[in-house]
Length: 199
Image (tube, rainbow, N blue to C red):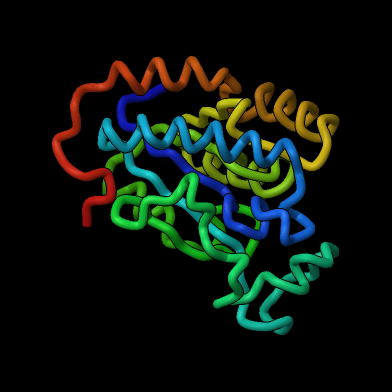
């Protein structure tokens, strides 16, 4: 851990958490969403910045060549599936934005948001571990952040890719630790001097 953390929430929108959608029926992601919600409640009391993303496009013309049917069917601006899961959402506090690639950093305002608040440590949560979480971890590492992944706060479709990717990013780019360890560290932070999502 460094001195100034932020929590990044990757794609915990209804497309991945609501069983009405094909991708919303993944048990590991449901567990990750619940655990992330608990971590966020603590982080916000400490004034820690929170950035959340969803994935959306204007049309097939600006969409990359995804091979996932649910993305092709639902991941468009204004689709109800892009609403944040209410378990992790605080509209008055969080910085929530759309991304159009696996990484939360790719062509988004995230780096500006983090730089303005002098963040040096990012705590990456969300889904999926082998996809957008991994891409976000790699880009965060590439930008020079300390990267923390609480293993109970990320999820995937299957345990195999989940565990393999946690092991791999833990060898190369991030510290993969328990949710309890992250929450204990957050609990020890000084009281906030202001809102986490300051302008």
